[in-house]
Length: 337
Image (cartoon, rainbow, N blue to C red; front, top):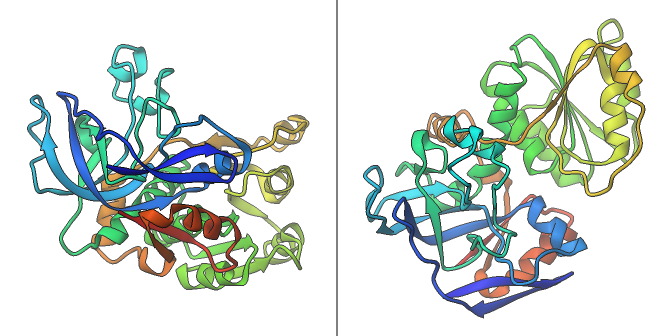
């Protein structure tokens, strides 16, 4: 099969590789569309495991079913995530697979991701690794669903309430999905800070009340002017840089919540006393809710279509990666085998 294989910084090549083997508890999926995630761009920019096949955002059709699988059938339209776990540890026994110390995702050489013609995924209990894609949703929407599942998980984990004042820092794919997830539960006071005009326009379309161009205006000043008596109840940090982390602590009120959804490329020093004196909850999120996200899309409470900005054939994977990094209007870039 063809796959986009990582060879080093800024070096993705489409090559012929073996079709991944199907485990007894897994399925083989013919990939219809696959997304390029920010976590794929990190190694593309900074280096990673040579030979890795990235891609954990995808949709496709099941073409082979393992002997121990009874909940998924050939021909099913699905979304899911390729990964492996030990199935023996404390967390695996509780079906909290994201916490397994031996969790491997695409980017590890032993996990063949979905930026390929086929991908193999395990079938875990409770829609944790694979979920059926309803007929009213396209494969393209399905490939963009994983970021929404991350957003839904974060909003649920933070126990956001409809009357909360919420700030989302970062107007990339995750940030925009968080705005949609917040609107879906009735949150009506949302401020979004980000860069790039297209993303800021979409933040407004997705439901933000106030949009802040971080290149021109200071989010701290805007929040203090908008909610001078309370500041923010909840802040979602999705940019993953020191400046926005410090801004999050500055704009949350004492006793509020800062939800960390961004992946930080660079370590930095900070003084935890700031969070201690404000009695702040720091909530780090690493999880997904596929079933909840499918429900939102099926009910029309969220919409991925406006967030899909570019589509490339798999043969043009490098062009897709470069567009995701450099194009001013890039939101979600899809590859299509």
